[in-house]
Length: 431
RNA sequence: GGAGAGAUGGCUGAGUGGCUGAAAGCGCGCCCCUGCUAAGGGUGUAUAGAGUUAAAUCUAUCGAGGGUUCGAAUCCCUCUCUCUCCGCCA
Image 1 (cartoon, rainbow, N blue to C red):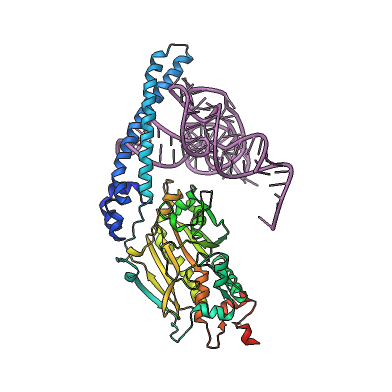
Image 2: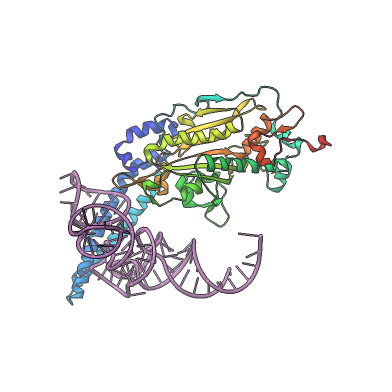
């Protein structure tokens, strides 16, 4: 969440920055507007309530002392009967105001960083550079490639669970696992991340800590009878490992990589990418997470981005690096770079990794703090990014490494993870 | 799933209605003593909010939420989590 003090001292500038996300962010019925008006109200009630409580505490102490000394305290007791009632009433009002304010505050998105380009949607994103040579010949869609090879099976996925689920078979399943291992090894052994393995279910508090709740409950799978959800990304459990902790400066930077399955309801994307593995309800991802000193956030973002890039380059997949414009930023992000991989069948680049700095936004929400030079706790900065989305990487390999005879070559870096397999071939053709 | 025990500050651990934000010990910070790796002494050591130039001071927090009371870490209720035993089980 945004910093509450800045809300009072810097509201004009913040509002300007928020406008860049889109005008509705600061509309009259927006959380921003509510927070602004509720702030003063909440503080007034709180102060009033505290004054009464102070009074109550003082007299209660007096009563205790008088009684201890065997003196008569009936006058104080009578007086306190009234005060206590008022105190309780005001306390409830103050708490209600605080809850309302907090809810508003939790629904305000992060302030875009100054270096984020203006723009309304993905069309205004800024291309930074491209790498590799996009393949321009005619290549079938990955679902055709995969089904022809007998390694992708969408019908069975639908039979088992519904649309947007799939089954991987044989070399396809192996490739999924190979990618997972390859990425984790690379990040853990070369890039200096400590590997963690975490729950794929998170409770409400945890989901709130990284910003998925309260606003985006519809995007999540909720568990029946429990206030818990399937995680949409490893960012949620990994970041929240440190929730409500005060870290020592010497512990930073904290760097974790994690493989998890990810679950998304894709509520708002009906009709988009309905075929194939691009947009599934369940997919695998290796995630990179860093916790750093606030002033190092953007440096860490560059570093983390380079780690995601290293995977793409090791797999020799052509990609494009994009700086997201303010209108296309995610709710919690202050700045995001997307990595888009070339998909020849679609003749375009498609997102395969999203690397973001959240500044102190998540640190404040999740109560993750670090001591500064004076020993005062302040919210840590968090950075995370896909390193990479595995299903989409598999798609990119099928298409970019597809051969005219229907086979798919295994990228050299992956061959050791495929038991030395160099090429996936159709078993029927082989015979 | 059944039965029981428990949840206190960075840690260990006292505290069963009033001057306890919390004894004591450990750890850690600073100072002193001592010429030599030891030991001793003093002092400080939660978070958030309000307040102040800075203090002082005030409020909240002893797993979470609610209740009883003038007053709760202490009593009552609900929930969560941990531990032990039983059952079941990858």
